[in-house]
Length: 70
Image (cartoon, rainbow, N blue to C red; front, side):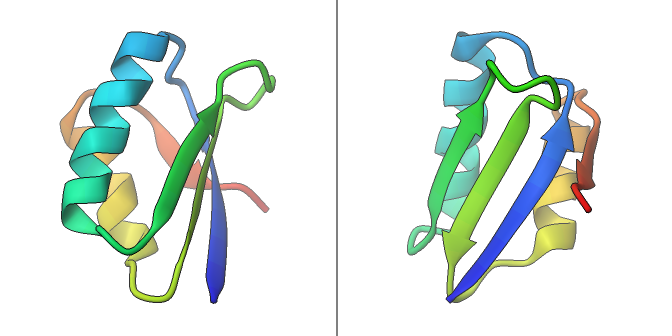
């Protein structure tokens, strides 16, 4: 099991739901959620088979910043 946490600039719940749908389509076996109340607007992905770089790419293609939170 792999867990990755990303810092994003996603602020709207509606936008986060759209992104979750898109990421779930790409990584159906993963649990994906946002914490928009966190100051880093955290995106958390948990699963066995996902690519962190692809997640960053999906968010950037949708006009959002995304980086792995260290």
